[in-house]
Image (cartoon, rainbow, N blue to C red; front, side, top):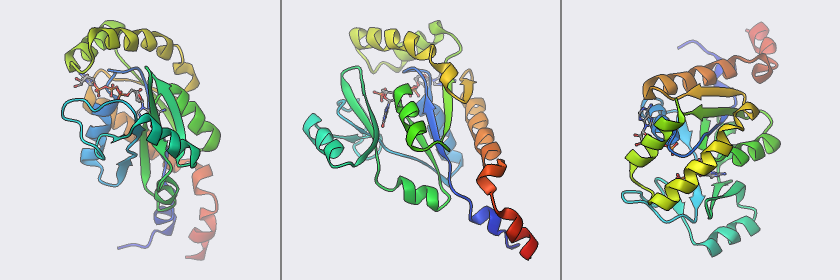
Length: 209
Ligand code: ADP
Ligand code: 5GP
């Protein structure tokens, strides 16, 4: 195999995916992971109770409020947010090590979460996943069947405010087709890796060979 140090030495991308509840973030991320074994999804910590079928350590690390606040106190959380009365946070754990090893890391986080990551990781890539319409968002959330009517109302109310924040993101993808949205995120990742800024110093390696 040809030696390609510039590729193998590359740092991973921190890809933040945000968008209203029900827009399809989890579905699109699962699609990406299924066909890209080198991408990882950072499993968040939450105080929200598990939904039917959700597994601790797979979908989320489910923790009590006390446990979450203690993790915060100990500096174990990279960013966090209070969303619809529950805490959600990205564990620091091994994110820096993964990025240093060249692994692309996907975060499925709230809009304030993405803005907070941008502060601590200015090189992070922010992607807003938009529903095709508000009516379709309502149908998807209802179709998922995971929230009671009051929780759904809260999430949809929040969605109006969230959609108005799309302009704060670098990329915006309308999720009208799962495979197409996943491909677009992969295309963004590929283009971001090609930014000169992310490959600074490659000339030295090229000229030395
Ligand atoms: P989020 O993670 O953003 O809250 P989910 O991934 O749970 O959203 O998706 C919400 C619902 O919408 C799920 O039932 C999912 O199967 C469905 N869904 C996601 N993307 C699409 C799409 N492009 N077209 C139709 N249904 C979709
Ligand atoms: P859900 O309850 O539907 O799984 O998630 C609710 C919201 O929390 C979604 O917008 C999701 O992106 C967000 N979320 C999940 N994990 C995190 C996290 O670690 N940090 C932040 N800030 N938001 C998260």
